Image (cartoon, rainbow, N blue to C red; front, side, top):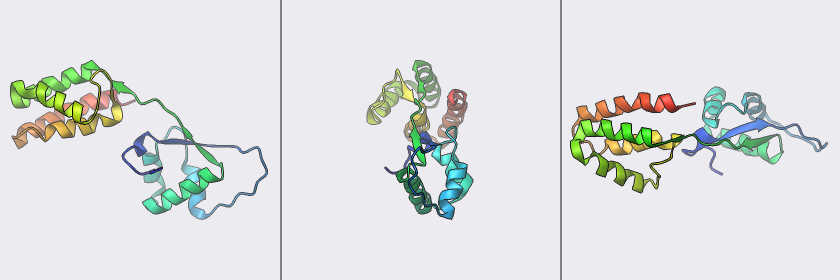
Length: 156
């Protein structure tokens, strides 16, 4: 499992109270990480809080998992629906005109996304990918600026 991939913002962990009496071995990095783990914080938030390098964070996280001191928490990814796609189309139409729908459809297909439910954690990537098709730099910036509050409004 690559803990620091682009899906790290969707990884959550919780502490576990073990019921066995197996021996536990912790080093300073593992203790620091264990203290920071909270099931309401994503791995990205935890990494920023503990200020560990990625190799150290991965190693400590892996050892905590192996010893059964933490476990992953499954959280459903919020989906953005048709309203998001409509706002995307509206803002892109302002930037490039009637080709907007074609650009959006192509980008959705490339990313293998369903317009009826776009995962919130992929919305910014979609906006950035679409922005690459806006030839005018000022229109590109306006498009991104217009989409930021749309994405932020949907963020839980």
